[in-house]
Image 1: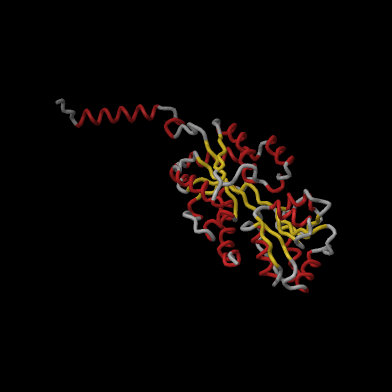
Image 2: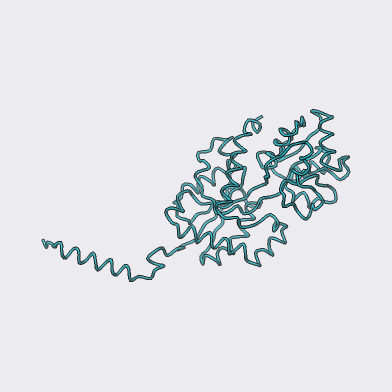
Amino acid sequence: MRTFTRRVVLGVAMAGAAAFAALPQAVAQDAWPDGPVTIVVPFAAGGSADRVARNIAPFLEEELGTSVVVENRAGAAGQIGTMQVLARPADGNTILLHAQPYLSASIVLQGAQFGIDDFEVLNVHNVGNISVTVRSDAPYETFDDLHQAIMENPGSMSMGTVRGGASHLLALLLKDKLGWENRLVTYDSGAPVRTAILGGQIDASTNGAVSDAAMKPKVRSLAVSTSTGISAFSDAPYLNDALEQYGAEVPEIGDVRFLAVKAGTKEAYPERFQALLDAYEAVMENEEYQALLQTQGAAEETSFRGPEEGTEIVRNMHELMTEYQSAFQQ
């Protein structure tokens, strides 16, 4: 058997190191992406989160130079798809497109086998304004009109909202901050809430402002939840402005749709994490993509906020869900 001396071994090692150093820098660091990137949507096809993923996918393909596949993994209020993302490597090849407060509802209310720290946010894609909406023929011209009616008729007035969503959280906040004793009627999605308000089955609703605006002139908005407002309800005041006369204030919240990767990705593959961010930001600046958002009425609510601000928004919503979890369970 041939015996290798220490000098020979060192010589081979040094030659190998020199050869590696001579490789193109991009290959030496990380030739990525080397396959498809997958966006997992833990909800059924056709919903708002799915639409965001399918809108952005072809533009991300152009920026990343690889195919971007959208997978719908619905079930257990988003838990099935989320668990599938966490079962895959933290390598940047899988992106989760989720929504708040639904992610936190799974954690806080349903005992999901994951936590808020299991994700690294790339960006909060949009924050959907919530409208306090009534029928146009309702006797409430202003938010104060609705407030006075609820205070004068404790227990008799109803407000519709989407169960477990940001609109539900806002309805609970209004009850808490204003001392309302109104009935909350919860629905599985925004569509039946809109049907109920048009049919006069409920007195008012908290629901997605963009979708509610599509019902004009049959409805009017008494207030919207974020200070950016919405052009379709341009005459609706910012909710906290409407609440000021009662000495009340609520956090600025909305339906938050965000993209994230599995925790540990940034540390293990910082170049990939940055590449995803750069590609994402480039998509948001793409004129064709912005035109698409305009046609869908989503441009006002969509922007590139980045990981730091996005993480803050996602975590603030989680804290609110934790604070109000007992009210959700009533």
